Image (spheres, rainbow, N blue to C red):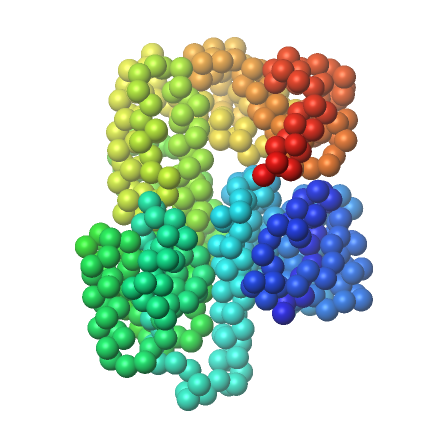
Amino acid sequence: MLNTLIVDDEKLVRKGLISTMPWEKYGIRIIGEAGNGRAALDFMQKHDVDLLFVDLTMPTMNGFELMKEVRMQDPKTWIVVLTCHQDFDYIQEAMRAGAIDYIVKTQMDKESMDDILARIVERIRYDQGSKAASSGTQTPKTAPRRIFLLALMSANKDKESASNLLKTSVPSATPYGDRIWSIAYTDDETESSLRRFAAQSDDFVLVIVHGETHISAASIWNYLFYEYEPNRSAFELADLPAKAAGNQTRDETKRLEEHWFSFRWLYDEEQWRLAIALIEQTRPDSRLVTEMFRLSVSLWRQMFRSSGGPDPYERLPESLLSWRDTKQVLDELRSELKQRMKGSAYFVEIIVSILKSLYYLSQLDDLRVKRDLVAAKFNMSSGYFSECFKTIVGKSFGEYVREMQIEKAKRLLVETSDPIYRIADRTGYKDEKYFSKIFRERVGINPAEYRKAAERIEQAK
């Protein structure tokens, strides 16, 4: 069992994680909880901890400071980061600091909990296997020659129905992690039958791993994300490339993020080719690519919602399992956006500057932000920025920020046990009464009533 400590300053989050996640199913035992990094270190002085779940933003000692201390005192401890929003800089910094995975708390649901824990445990197994191999504790006799895996590539089939299908067609299949099943090799007929099954299936592909005893599900998915082709039913890996595991250098990651969120590739063909080349050459973690894509789409929708006409983003599939599909959808959306920008009264550079300002706002934790400062950041006068923002986005800068503040407040009311005055402060309001007044005007009920209503809904589930 993996002795595990949950570290988060929100008591409700800690209790929720402890009570809802299927820990024992994956050999994880919760031995304690802490409200900040200092309390976590004190706990670790008295108890053996194998695995840490760490919130990044905490008082007294935040998650980054805790990770640094743990790396110095006990570098063998595995760390999983907890975050409330998809801040790419935060996530990348956490992964560079030694985290093996991250969880966006706002995206957790019962269906994803198994996948999350399976992914984490597979990474730990991979690390354990690598350490054992490097220390010479494994022998050729105990290392299997090949691993046979079936990966669910269909975004339209849920995990449960896929599992039932496998029980009928491949009875020996056992869960390997995150929509992947392993099959015990018995004889040559095993491979033949699996190849036939994959070739005839619209949902699964066969992955045969040669000479690798421990390989994480995340590494396999990253490989398939970039290599998958619709008419190919089997993949053989003699040695998983380092890039397939999403192992980017800091410079590669920074260069990709800067290029992507410059959004110049939306209208400049050379920049578009460079964006594609950066992704295909560095092969970043497929989850980060998908999140960058989803965030971009969200920002585009906000920009062009007021322009009328059909919404091209409603056609987006719920899941993009391959880079081939992602690139195709991205190219189609890019063509649509170019047409819309051509029909605008503003130059494309101005439109992109407003888009970049939306991205900048989305990454802010403190929403006490002034229009003049944002305008200056994008080299625009305050008045012209205000005019362009309202025309392109369909609402004033102040109104847009107030909507962000209310949405953040609603999330904090549900996810945390913070008192109302603290939530008011965290969303940019110094006065609790004024915050409650604005919240009631926009939501229809006051913050306390909203929290109680959310609790009743959760209890009724």
